[in-house]
Length: 173
Image 1 (cartoon, rainbow, N blue to C red):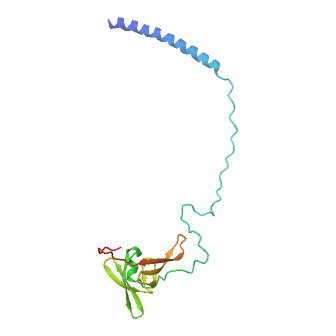
Image 2 (image 1 turned 180 degrees about the vertical axis):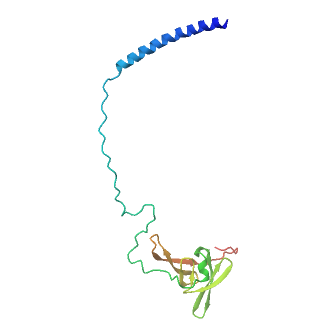
Image 3 (image 1 turned 30 degrees about the vertical axis):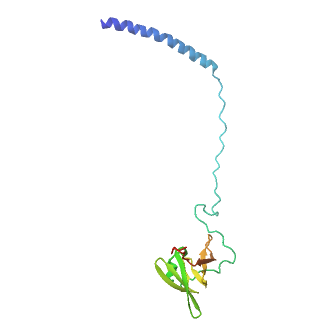
């Protein structure tokens, strides 16, 4: 019984496919007529010319370079061989002048670093930038610091450490 059913179904499928195949053949014929027959020739191949790099004498852009130094700036340099003083271990911002002391003709400044008091005089060093004390008054300590600029040269800079004043409530400015 299935045999009688399969044979007519197969015949029906073959009949339905034949009409689509005819349409497909007609489409291919029409498409062939619209195609151009002559293909343009390929352009001529240009010979390859390799690039020759001539920048070997130029500085490497990926390595830091030293900025050219100023003329006449080579005379200033810190004395790296001298013995460091205790206050040179602290940045100048952490040092506080809390008072002065005079013994005979010598004037000393009292400087607090963390919780310790130090007595300094003209000619002593303090701060991490080779700060030489040039003058001490009742109101401030004047320093001459030696710092490196962006070119790597040493330059002098004047700094002042003012007296730490107490207010009426005991707070310090």
